[in-house]
Amino acid sequence: NWRGLDLLLKAQPYIHDVLEWRGQRPNVNGDDFRAHMQRALRRGEGRNKSLLDWQLDTHGIPHESAKEPWLSVPTNSEFNSACPRVIINRSGSNRPPENQYFIMLFPWHRVWQKYKDHAAFVGLPEEHEAFCGACGEIPHCVTSNLYEAAQVIQGCELFIGNQSCPYWIATAMGKRTVLEVWLHGP
Image (tube, rainbow, N blue to C red; front, side, top):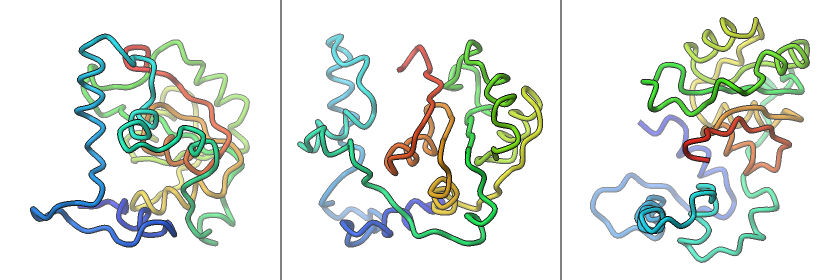
């Protein structure tokens, strides 16, 4: 299941096609960075590099190119007409503790207090429920896939989240972001 990632990638003018891998030789393998990253981390190098840095290094792309937005989607009036200024995402609430990429020190309740009247949550229903249970109620922008989540993010002025796919979508779109950093894997 692509979960809309194929639609998001195909919306980019510099991507010609996205195909399911069936043994053919790919032009670009998005997983190539993992081996490069693991070798460096075993040597004690690169602990503070982001996934984006690893991708850029692996594929020989200058880091300066990531300073400009490189991901976009057409606006969707269904989402963007009701889109609040601030989008919040906190993923991982349904994962085992060792796979939850957030920390207890992040001031989520203060974030909620400041932005609750101008914010909505994008993410899975259980993530929205966990966030509201911990902080307070905000509307849930229900999306069925990553492409629709990107359309919601496209319409916001500020994105606040943890180290998640929606965060990286917001970063790639050049949105202002606030990141809850997971201290064990910044």
